[in-house]
Image (cartoon, rainbow, N blue to C red):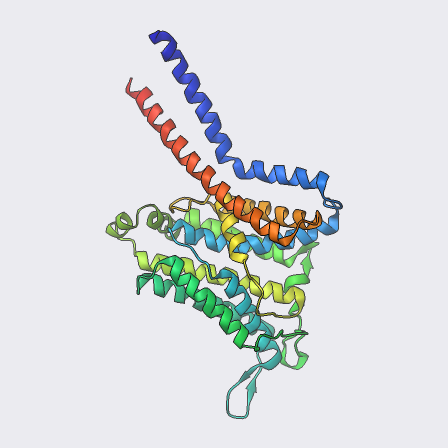
Length: 355
């Protein structure tokens, strides 16, 4: 009897280890599953034109999800990213069309690179506001970013009284032409958006895995109190992740306005859903302390392919929102199951070593 129980123990441990491996690979499995499903179910899904369009959509989700990943790793959440997208798009549109009235009978017009820098700075500043509310005023991340969601969206609407900034072609005499190239241009046949994603994603992955700041981000999410006692400046780390999230949202605002050659204050609504879904689906734990940029990018591919495939199948946008919500819940449930199974396997391995 004892011999049978002893023999069954390694088999059970092996089965659990296999299940744990499958759970860890769930994002890649989901990516393959949705790709194969839409390849057969959606017309023209495998066409070259669709791949180009889909890659741009995936990139937008990925930018937001990369910033969201750092925030969630620290145990926070950023609901304001969609509104920052809209606000930054309006800032770029306003600067291209109207310049800056200095109030002395002179209007300052910026060139296109200066406009982009100012727009990115606006995103960083909104992120800094989030960080200030959370670290200095001790406002819960959910409430702080919910408040800035409304502030940023309201500011976007006020900038044009709710109207669109159209025809953002710029003026050659001020060096503000060529804005469309950011969202529509390509290099070596690959859209600039994808090249930019490679740079931002690669930089974020390097920061997370190879730098002290990256280790501090994980430490704060794993145990904030222990991180503080070990000398980590927790407030500075949190400020950084929210500012970086605002930076990523500003990039998306610029890209969308560039693609449309127009800015609309409602741009970015519900984008935070896609960002959270991609990060969580990619293995980022909502409880903090765990997540990888590579997994998040794969998660963004899943969400992007899912969204575009549903559109090509003619599924209502209302049902698309429902499905994304289900994906978020399912990802969290699977993540919790993985953590429980991982803890159980670790205990069994320790018990085996003890014998």
